[in-house]
Image 1 (cartoon, rainbow, N blue to C red):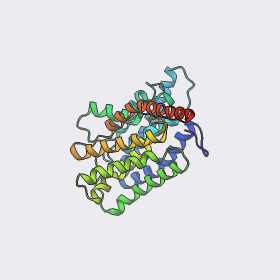
Image 2: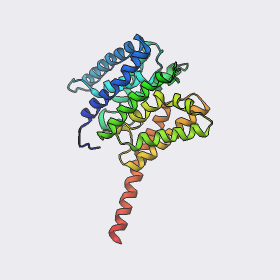
Image 3: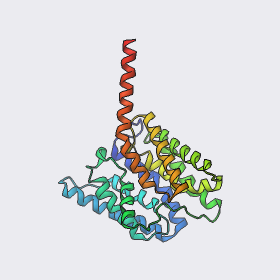
Image 4: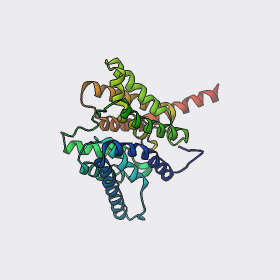
Amino acid sequence: MKSPHFTGAASRAQWMCMALLPALLVRCIQGGTVPFRAAVLAWVAAMAVDALCQFLRQQEIKPGRDAVLTAWIVTLSLPVDSPVWLAAAATVLAVGIGLHAFGGGALVLFHPAMVGIALLSLWLPGLQQFTVPVYANTWSMLWPALALTASGVALCWARLIRWQLPAAFLLAVSVVLIGGGYTLSSLLSVLVPVGLLAAFFIVAEPQTSPILPRPGMLFGLLTGALYGWAVLHCQPRLAEVVLLGNLLVPWLDRWALTEYSRRREQRRLS
């Protein structure tokens, strides 16, 4: 995906890391020292595993912005009061397996952060990942919502992500939950911060989402509907939902390109 403002995967990852900083700051202010230590430990683990994997693959060892982005998404995805070592363990799995096992860069099929959390939940079945946080009041919910929304809108404006994906995801989640009897306040508790984080930084990740806008919207609607259904009927497991959607991405891209070629041929012959 080309951008008139920023180009290249490294630049995209760098700006997405910067876009996550306000949400990390709000999380540290509201949660105290535990989320701060988790973020730092996850960052150290990401840099160490990334350097080790580059060495084993006989590549030039250089700081990986994708690894840092993965570490911070993992940190924001786990519950605020989870043990600090959980973020580091999930980051090690995410970077080592989710990022480097598939070759890294454009070769990544599954979202690395979701791979790490899904594998961690297999080893720790009692892990309540993506637990809906309990906010003291509406104001405490407002700050993470503003931080993630402003960052997401900025990424869409810079064309680092396509707006169709987060819009479709949030629409599908809202429709399913409201249809299932959720009130506005309970819907907001699901969307803040997990839903907004998923919409702008996980589902809309360019490397693991469809290339074209139409299959991208279908991908966002599908993952949003599945996540809403999971919230209604069982423990919300966003990682598994996203990984299932990632499996369909090559098929969605192939279908869209085939349909585009067919219509172009029809116009040529008419």
